[in-house]
Every structure is written in structure tokens, then in C-alpha cells.
Image (cartoon, rainbow, N blue to C red; front, side):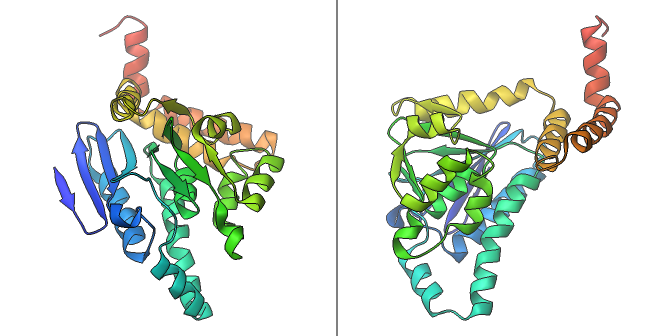
Length: 256
């Protein structure tokens, strides 16, 4: 199954919903059209019953270079209200990625910079090719990676976040893994196959349990210890009542 749009491609590969940023001539730079289509592609992927995970990758040599020149020109000329609407479209995408009940995986090759690095950071998991490059260079043009900051601060230490956001330097995939931004680094030559193999591991887990775990993980962020435990207890009870859990316990105990 393939759904073709101007800026984004979506296909179903068994249990994997594959979303591809498709502006290679612009290094997959973000603009209003791409953000809208990407948001829609994520929603469509969730609606497919067979989907166990969503993979966001990109056509061409780079993952995403951030906002394109036309979008930056638009920002410089827009009114306050227009800039609010533009910023909230990306905010809504970041919120959606955390709200959907499926793992959303960024498969990063080439450069992921500025908003492109923010998009990768916003995903639940990040896989990177060994030559991938990351960076938040917004401060170099007087811009602030403000929404990305909220996500980055939850992925790395305060001091690392400060350094990455205020120096604007690029860094490699291995350093990104050491910082906690990347889960796995795979060789360039085998990257596509490794991403598929990694993602297919979700076929061996309970879809409902993964959904509840994802929701709980982000829900308890910032909770006090006791509140987090009490919320976990509530989800524990819900999980026990699911069909997956009932069948899993029966299998574990040797039933049929």
C-alpha cells in the first residue's frame, strides 16, 4: 500500500508503517506543507490495525535540514498571529508523536539539523547511521529551538542540553548515542536492513502493553514519586484486564 503526497510518502510494510520525508532536493527541509502531510501520515498509520511501529525516514542524502529558506523568509515577514499559527503546527506534530499508542522511530541518515534534529528528538526512538550528523544551530541566526528544548531537556542532562542548544555545533551519531539522543548506531551499508530488523522486534511484544507503557512513561514525567507510583498502579490494573495479558498469563502457565 502506498499513499503518495507531494512532500511525504507512506507505505505499509507488514507491521511497519513507513513514512518518508520526500523533499530530497531541499534536503527534506521543513515547511508548512511537509509538517501537515507528516502529521496526517502519522494519523493514517495509527488507523492501520496491522501497524506495530511507525518509522520516519527520508529520501536523498539527508534526513532533514530544518526549515527551508522560504519558510525562514515567511517567519521574518509574518505577523505575530501568523507566527503563532506556524509554530503551533509543529507543536501539534510533536504532541501527536507522543500521544499515538505506537512506537514512533526516527531512522536518521545524513544530516538532522535544527527542526530536523528536533523532529528526530521528538520521536520515541532514534536509530542513526554511523555517518549521521546532528545539531541545533538555531542560535547562530538569532533563533531559539524553544519547543525542541522541552524535549531535549527530557533526553539529556541539563548541562549537555545547555551546551547543545547554545553552541549550535554539529555532532556525530556515536556522540549522540553517548548523550542519550540515539538508541542505536548502525553501519551505513546495512542501515536500512538494520532499521527493519530492529523495528520488527515489536512483533514479539504486546501491542496493548506497549501502548499503555508509552502513555504511562510520558504521563509520569514530572510527577512526584508517590503520584507516579499511584498512576502506575492504576495502569497495572488496566493492563491485567487486557486480552493480551490474559492470554499471555495463560501461555506462561502452560495453558493453551
